[in-house]
Image (cartoon, rainbow, N blue to C red; front, side, top):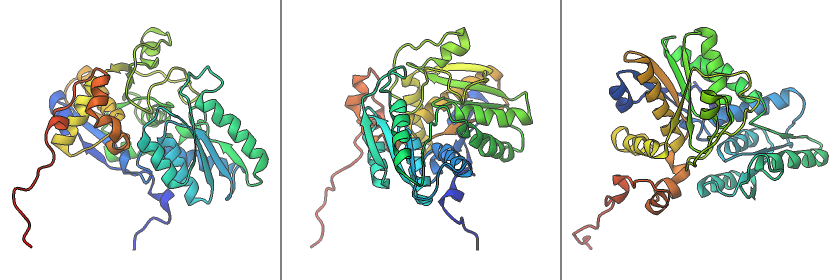
Length: 346
């Protein structure tokens, strides 16, 4: 018999999927790593597992302990899945602007949810900083320990991708990978995977796909952390150099607009059967941009972060999209249900 001994063993080793339209349009082989297939439904399961196991190894956390973090949702879901499997409680501080679907998922998994107003990182009441203070208080009260997962500045996040994601991509492509592209939330996925791949082949090109409202495209192209505009994407976009980003410089930086990502997301649904969140579409747009920079014949890998259902009320909401100045995809304007023109037999 072959089976995973627990849910932690089911995290990672996700397949690579060839993205047909992106590959055809660029003349490259563009592959997406199917992280939506992780138990918690996203790439953040890897960081969650790495952070919690690191805390246990350091003696900071035991069964009955509490995991606390400020998160836009997916890391919180991953931490709760891992925590549940190890007999630990989870307290998640989340900006109230995040999708209802992610909040509902966290509550359904048993996490204690603390919703707070969305304010800039420099504000002491930013969700990340509230998470840190809350963890300190719980640690004083819980004899089994409590940790602030601190996903943005805890390099156990980056290390998880150095140990798993990068080596998996290398093995799955037989070492024939030419480029790696990812957006940034914490920086752990982009940088950890890049470090593992470049250790094996320094010629591999690494690119960041950044969104409006984030500052890293500006930083890596002009040296100035400057954010302009806004984006409807969740969980990506960064305005500072986190500990997971320290010491890293990409070979390329691309800015991806929401409309471009939205068009890709809905084309994937209709043409390839992939229903993905907008961050995955941002990554694919970035992979296509890198493919055009490098020229035909290369193999580019990117991350398929999570599924579209986690953003159902916004991504599939014509009124919401129109309110943000975005074209409503034809799929949403089409009749997707019909009334039968016959009566059932009694």
